[in-house]
Length: 128
Image (tube, rainbow, N blue to C red):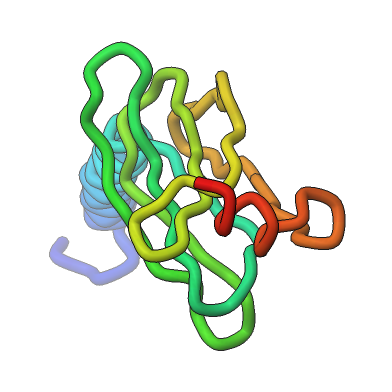
C-alpha cells in the first residue's frame, strides 16, 4: 500500500523535516559565532569643537588615527584594536587637550568629550 498517509510515508516526511531543521540550525549557529568572533575592535567617539581634529593613539603601539570633528561637533574613531589610548584634541596640528589612559574594549565604544568652556581651547592653543 503506497498511500500518502501511510505510517511509513509520514515518518519519512517527519525525518526529512527534522534533518532540514538540523541543517538550518547548524548554519544559524555558525553565522552567530562568526559574527561575535569578529568583534575584536572598539571605538572612541564624542563631542568636540567644530573645526578641530582628534588624534587617537595606542599607548602600547603608537598606532592610531586622526579624525575631524564634523559640523555638528561630533567625532568617531572606529575599528580600534583593544588597548589603552591617548585621545588628543588638536587645532592646526597643535595639541590643545588630552585624555590619558582611555580604555578601548572589543565590541564597545567609549565616549570622550572635549568641552572648551572647561579647558579654554583658544587660550591653550595660543600659548603653544
